[in-house]
Every structure is written in structure tokens, then in C-alpha cells.
Length: 112
Image 1 (cartoon, helix red, strand yellow):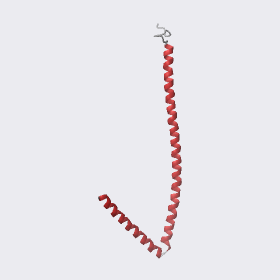
Image 2: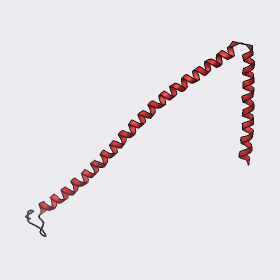
Image 3: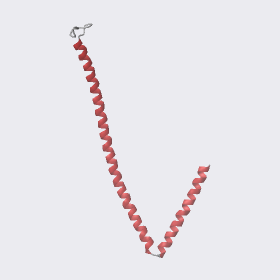
Image 4: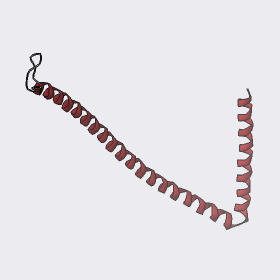
């Protein structure tokens, strides 16, 4: 039977195993610290995402209020009488004309 406690080349088996264990412990400590860093980055990113989503919710709420008010004013103008209907027709005709002009300009620029 071989004696495992007998030193080889001046180093005992226990010392070799202890050295290997120490290397593995150091490697494991490095991996744990990297995982901790990744976990902290994930936490920071998730908190930033939640803040961003909350901000978007309030922005959409204010945009909804603005559009609701605009639609109410537009409905009141259309329902109020003949003069406003004529004005609304002029506004629609002007918008259609502007759209056609912009379309013509854009098509000329892109064709060049």
C-alpha cells in the first residue's frame, strides 16, 4: 500500500490538496463577486425601468386630458351653429391643401 502522507518532491499530498482547495476557493470567490455585481446592475436597471414606466403613465395621462379637452372644444364648435360649420369647412380645406402642397414638395425633393 502506498503511503499518502509521504512527501513527494518535498511537498506532501496534504499540502498539494490544500493548495488546490485554496485555488478553487479563490476562483469561487471571484465568481461570487462577479455574480453580485451582475445582480446589483440588474437591480439598478429594473428600478430605472420602473421609474421610466411610471413617468410614461403620467405623460400619457396628461396627453389624454389634453386630447379630451380638444375634442370637447371641437365638438362644441361643430354643434354650435352654421357660422362655425363654415369655419370648420375652411379649416379642413386649408389642411387638405397644405397636405397636398407638402406631398408635392416631398415628392420633388426625393425624386432629385
